[in-house]
Length: 269
Image 1 (cartoon, rainbow, N blue to C red):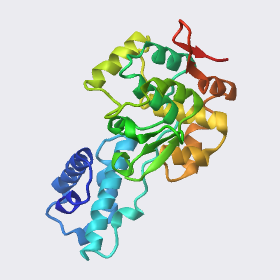
Image 2: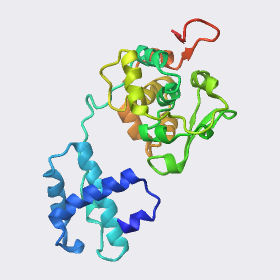
Image 3: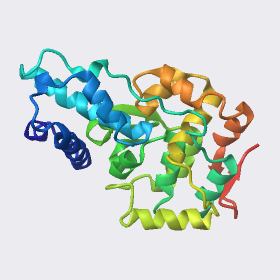
Image 4: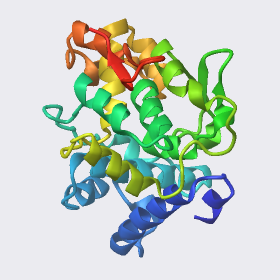
């Protein structure tokens, strides 16, 4: 943990690392790392009683730990590398918002939270990345949104294209500075969702919706993987293909505010 503190890692990651390695230490704390075999670790992971996603996170944290031990010369190989990851069920794993739900949400949103919803829907950033975003990360002239390495979950810098409809949503905020998200964000988002009549919110709804509508409209898993910060396009393709019909995807990318009209937005069919 002391070694990782010097790597400029975020507090949430460090807390998670401490918690998960702490659980492992409760079971193996009196053992030498060189004597712990893959089969023992595999059995411990299965006995946790966690979901497949949670088990895979334990797998990742343990791999980091044993790789550190390997770099210090305390063991010959990383035993976690030979342990298969848990298979995550795909059926029902990805939930998305309909075109009408996204439109209602943008229509009902408070002016201070509207950029959060628009960027989340049309750029697909993770929730934590959105919360760290600043207006200086919006490159208006190049129509690009930058996710700096220090604000990215993967600690790698990337750019996401600002498409024409998102540019229209953000235009009233041009010239702003500071953080994009307001204080007391969570309570404001709940209020927006209630105002839009959305009671059943899918996990990572904005990000999954972005990916699904992007892939259906533009048919480019490599570009989508780059914009989402994925390392492999085949993973992106497998998760999001065939979730949305192309016609619906075209409507999604035309959700835009009306200019000089009484109505707030238009969903162009």
